[in-house]
Amino acid sequence: MSQQTYRTILEVIEADGQLPPKPRGTKYAIKFVQPDWTTYNGYLWPFPGKWTPQISDEEWNDQTCVTGGVHVATTFVGAQSGGARATHCVVVAYRTSESGISDGGKIKVRRAKSLAAIDLYGAIRRRGREADLRGADLRGAYLTGRGAIL
Image 1 (tube, helix red, strand yellow):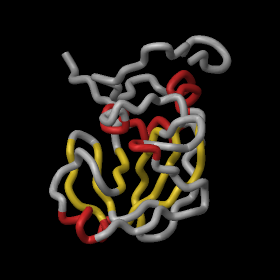
Image 2: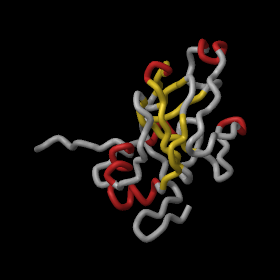
Image 3: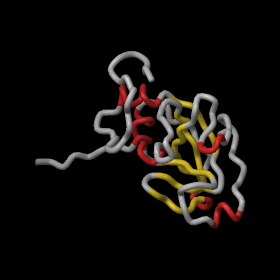
Image 4: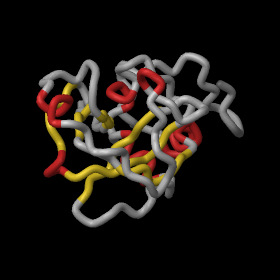
């Protein structure tokens, strides 16, 4: 019996053709935002093309991924860790030299750049075969027809 291999959510987005160009020297991540582009504690996430402000040394030195600072994710579950819903997904970039602790697919970074808002459920519907969505909360996702009903 062969072992199942899974694709990351970023690989699914790339296979769907929605992965935008990233600045040189950065890595891709994702961020779930509310319809008004706010995140945890009402923080207004920057629109595509803009960087978040660099976090303070105090926030950076807090060695937790619970609160404070800028967090991005490399997994679907990591992006949902603060209770965020996957209805609005932004592909972001960060510099590895400005990244810190990682916790369950979530990475604390000094700052991140929004690259593009994408149709994540569409990508999963079209290209999500063998995607690593173990533990993901997909309640309310309609993944069989055109468009997502959320």
